[in-house]
Image (cartoon, rainbow over all chains, first blue to last red; front, top):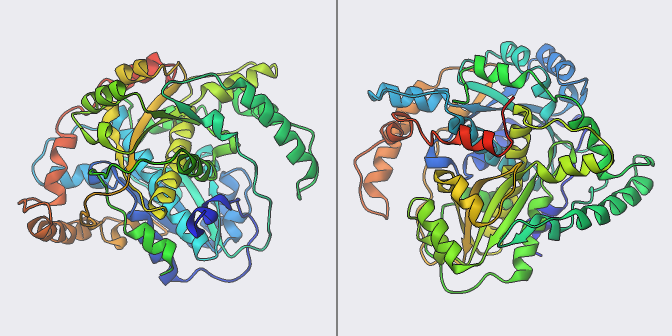
Length: 243
Length: 243
């Protein structure tokens, strides 16, 4: 294992940060590292909003489900899927542009995620800790309004960055045999059962205090209700019609 | 700049590979590095199919739009968004599960992309080159049938991996000032114009031979027709109804 792979395998979400600020120079380096990720047809369908306004940071922390570290971390970034820039650029060359295709939603979401993951790794390589904030999809319209996100752009997730002030455990992942399949998709319920045992043991001994659960049981609240049922209407309204 | 950030910034797609195989041990290391990426609520909504069958590799190369390196690269991986494993795991604990939410499509697509980008970086850190293959969405149903992808799972993109047999240029990206916005979304057409000039110069001098175009002009074929218009129906049929 080389140092980069060791770094990748040591990731855990950081939610407590020291007061040390993230310098502007470092922030730009991280974004440039993000932009170096692969992008579908070189479309670069993303924008990143660096939220520094304290009132907006507090508001987003609340709107994301009461995640106070959105307000307290060294830097908070909103990663947006951006189909406005490339479609308008094509229009300025005279192209008649089609918007709202499902494929465009996928391209922009995947482009944004690849870019963000490079930012995350660059940040961790520089001694920062990070935490993705999917909770911004709890209230995507209000958050879009706060920072003036226009049509054909939407916030996919946020990211807290800063110098770590705690040292949480690395959470075990599913067995590689469940994820990596040879030539055909195969059932993996045996590996899931073994993983449930491993996660039960992890939850008993983790630094954050014991919890009597498994991976499978933890998933129930994700699936037994309509998770973020406003997302379809929100996306359609912002010009991602999923045609 | 540390070595990890240098690595991130040196990415370019590799499409010509030596005959040196990718060892099974390395492949598993890469997937484990992928799994270490952040995942929404720890759902790990992805599977990776390692396609080794030569006939299937040839077929996928054709179905992805005639990308011969899918057949010739050292290892070819299909990255799939997987909502089957977690929803069925929750069901086995007695949960009544809701499927087909738009939010679930986003969660699984983003989880898959974060994971894949870690695989890409781990691969590049080990001396491999990679190329994402979005072209598998040209014919996602046929490719799903070839490798037995079930409902609630869909192939988001492929990835070619192998030891590089060419050394293409790193393509310039949009100016960081266009991507990184302070507190509010701001117009970036000036930066796009400057970038069009930079890309025009790049296309004139690149190793692959000169081409008289800009970034904005290159985008026209992406947007002046309905790109991959089958994606909506495909996803709905496979259980991603975007409700």
